[in-house]
Every structure is written in structure tokens, then in C-alpha cells.
Image (cartoon, rainbow, N blue to C red; front, side, top):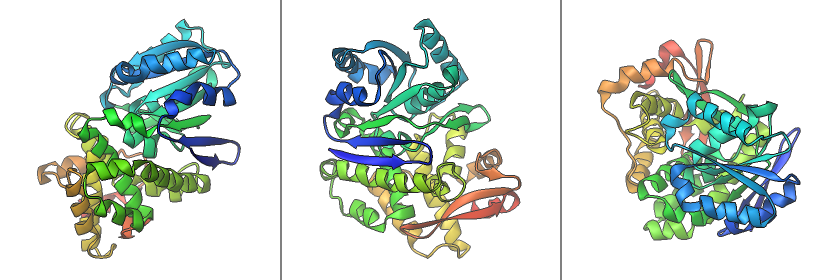
Length: 353
């Protein structure tokens, strides 16, 4: 079992990564929680696959379990879903001595984590991510949020879980498209911090070989994120690197109402598009965009979008949460494996699209 310790200024927690660790969830939760009541928050799809099994495991460990099931998909990461969770928590007479377990992908983790951070001013929660994108990225680091009509993740907080349990076996039930969605985030980590990881992905021959190595890949991404978060918990400097491709990606998601592109697909387009333009402006070493395109094609990820949407993308970026006054903090690459944050005046951002 791989254990990664996240050590922050005022708290710490462990990330456990191992095939089959879901079956140990009861014992692992008992190590950090001495209360009686646990509320599992999951979505319709994940509940059908793993909801009842997790309930059985936690009940066998002696906990009283309630389950809140929310609709799946990014378009449901909103205040309506959040309010529904609050009402259910009240119905179950949930108090600060109880715990939430988020069982699902990035949407479930984000909205359940935000509910935990705000209900009765904060209760403990544990992340059990079931998608690759959540296992390599969103379950770690303590960013929790919901979306507004005006933009993605505009309402949120920094609120860390007490523990993260990552079971790569849960990925076996993922549709290939949504597995590749997570690979986009792995590619992001490789681009900003780890050229060797990028080269490893390029060498992978097929999906079976990728799955055979997925535990090590998840560990590498979590290690990278852990190191960045420990140095910059509140997203003031280095942590912004984790947004490579996301400024454009979030805009694309919103333009298409979170229906045409998954998060990873939108980020994939964002990574390629911004690197093409930064090379033209001589802000990145030539050749990175071609390499990114090659690896995106390999994993059936999109790398471009019709230019007729460029103006809409520019408008959406004006509401991006990484904006500071008239400046937008944007992530570029010096070369593959070396990302950096560039402060770009909003009025000049059209150069990048």
C-alpha cells in the first residue's frame, strides 16, 4: 500500500493508494474517526456500482450510515444540488461529530467537500474518488466548490479531507471516454512538472499497458500535487501551475453547457491552443505544441476547436477566478516538463486565442 502524507501549516492527512482498498474503508475510517454516524454522498451512477458495497463495509465496521444520492454531471454541481444536500443532512440530524464520505468523481468530491466545509461551519469528510480525474487530481489538495451560471468553481473554499482512499480497481467500470478524460489531467502534470512522465505516456503501447501501470501513474501525480500544495496551499503562486489548460478549458465547458466536452477534453484543447500561441509569441520553446498534439491524439482527446468560438471564449475568460484586477494569471510552458505562471493583462489575452 502506498501512503502519501500531505503536511500543511495547520493540519495533515494521508492519501492511501492500493488496488482493492475500498474493502478496507471501514478499518481505515476508524483510524481517523471515532464518531458513529457517516453520510455517504454519491451520484446515481456510482451508487449503482459501489454505493451498497461501501454501505455494507462501513456498517460492518460499526457505523450508522445514511446515503445522499445526487444527479451526475458537471451541470449539476450547483447551488440547487448543494441545497438538496443540506436539507438531507438536516433530515438525518447530522452534527459536527459526524462525517461525510464523498464516493464519486470530481463533481461528487467538489460538491460534497463544499457541503462539508459549510454545513454547521464545517464537518469532517473523506474522499473516495472513483474516476481517474478525481484520483490523480481533484480529490487531493482541498479545493471544493460549486459552479454558477457565470462561471465554473466561482463559489468555493479550501477545505481538506481527513483522508483520501484511492482504489485503482474502481477505474475498471469507467467508460473509455471518461478514463481518457482523466488521462488529460495526467498529461497536464507531465507538461508542467515531469518530462519523464510525458515520455512514459508516449511509450505506452495500448490501454492494457496503461492500466497495468496506472497505480504508479496515480502515485506520481499525487506526489507532484502534494509537493505543490504543501508549498502553496492557498493558490497564490506555484499552485497556479495546476491550471495549465484550464482557463480556456473552463470557458469551453461553459460555452457548451458542460454537455459536449468533458472537463479533461476541454482542458486538452486548452493546453494545445495556449501552447501554439505561446510558441508564436516566443514564450515557449518550439516543438511543445506538436508533442502535446501527438499525445492527445494517442489518447483520443481533442486538441482544437472551431475558431468561430474564439470570441465567446475570450468573453468567458473575463470571469475566470484566476483574474486579479486587470491581470490574468495564466500558465505557459517553457518546454515539456517545465511550466510557469505568466501575468497577462486581460486586454492582451486575445493574443493567446
